[in-house]
Image 1: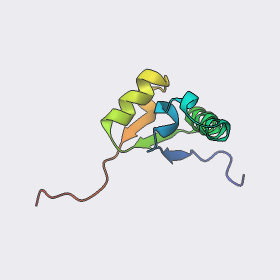
Image 2 (image 1 turned 45 degrees about the vertical axis):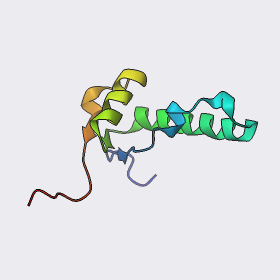
Image 3 (image 1 turned 60 degrees about the vertical axis):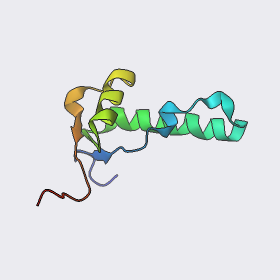
Image 4 (image 1 turned 90 degrees about the horizontal axis):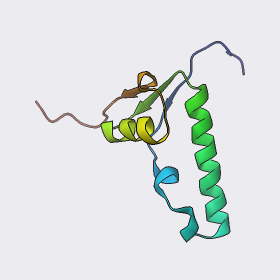
Length: 83
């Protein structure tokens, strides 16, 4: 890594690995889901800030994955039709 001291910010937008029941799929799909969960949890621990698209995702990470609330920023993306 070239910039070890640089803070890392990640966009997290896919809850699928955390809400899927791994018992209902094949061994290969279960292994992929477990690997995705591991990868995401590793990212939670090493990143400085996590950007999420909705408050629902933020609350899920705080309640179910025990991510510190101060680490998570909600950034709504898409069009703004207000004018």
